[in-house]
Amino acid sequence: MTFTQLALLDLWRRPARSLLTAAAIAIGIAAIVSLTSISWGFEASWQRANDLRGTDLIVTRRASENALPAAFRTDDAQARLAALPEVAEVAGLLSEMLGVDDLPPMFVFGWAQGSFLWRHLELLEGRWPLDDAEPAVVLGSLAAGLLRKHPGDEVTIEGVKLRVVGLCRSEALVENGAVLMSLGQAQRLNDKPGKVNILNLKLRPGVGEAGAESVRQAVQQSFTGFSAITSTQLVQQNALVRITKAMSAATILIAGLVGALGVFNTMLMSVSERTREIGVLLAIGWRRSRVIGLVLIESMALSLMGGIAGVLLGVLGVTVLEHHALLRGKINGVFTPELFAAALGLAVVLGLLGGLHPAWRASRLSPAAALRHE
Image (cartoon, rainbow, N blue to C red):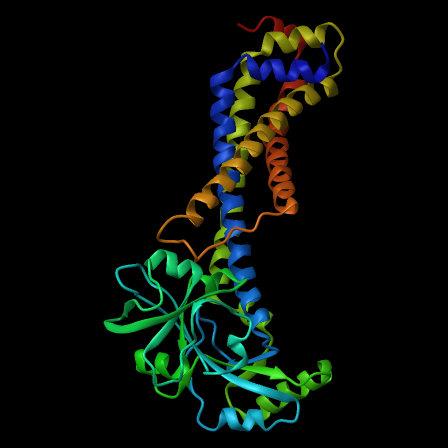
């Protein structure tokens, strides 16, 4: 029997305790994997949407760190920005989370009519809204499935009935699960005439980073309280992104503490129950370092089993949430080999930390006293 087989046999001899400890670790690792993947997916989805729209810079309030930037009046800002030599197009956007029919709130986007924001979408059925005056919406493919609507049907948004004129598909999940309409219609619906959350700037080809920096400086100097940032910066300062990241970090801390304490308790009890056995091993010539290695291998193997189960449970949990009616089209887990490796690595580290003191205690036993232990 090899050294590793002996360690695993010791775990197998106490199946109930080993399974309970592994389960505790699995739950912690599952929470870490699921929250981290959702956090990454939420950030990636918004980033993907901005990139697909062709937005180079975004003008928004400097202190805006909400889930959706605060709405502001454009007044003459749009014309002044469009007059900058580096800017090719300016398009306003108004976003809100609103109740649609009897479903929980979903994203409702109002985009400037005929702007570059619409060009990346694939029209599956019907047509686009004709103008700002038409009370019409286009549904993302996921939103259409949730609402069970087709072109010609009506949807009720915050008590206002609007006709579905088209269905579209985007490579960004957040847009597939959204309701799209003209900017003017969104402003009337939200009682925010002339207001937008952000102004999307599309720069002229070839202006490069120097041109983008020139636009940033112009916005800073000419528009008090506003800044021109990249879509990446906007996503990073998004409150929902920050909250999910903070929750993920807190979960890692709590799960790590609980997991390490669970392994510590299990291995300490195991060492106590096997005092005579460890005494025999020391008496027949085992080095104390070998005893430490035996206990640490047990603790890390126990944690690794919990880690593997936790990764699988986390993936399953996120998959279930993605297809739940309340969250479908709103979250998208991102799973990478790096995430799985980090989760399993954390599980092994927890086993190492939880087993250090029991291993040291086992190695310090006196063979004579251990053999007399009852």
